[in-house]
Amino acid sequence: MNILRIIFAIILPPLGVFLTVGIRGAFWLNILLTILGFVPGIVHAIWIIAKNDEKSV
Image (cartoon, rainbow, N blue to C red; front, side, top):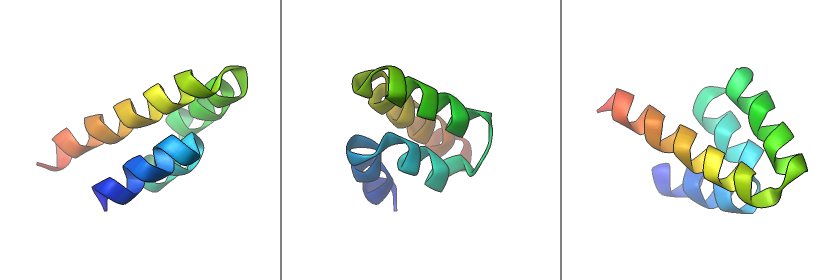
């Protein structure tokens, strides 16, 4: 599932964040970052996915 979330984070960053945390503050922040610039949205999405992977280990 992690690989799939990272692929979604690269193609459509808010989707990767949504699959990781749901509709929370990080999701809305990622939508804003994606609108302002696609690359910041990708970086934030990958960071959120990686941060939540550490919690589950």
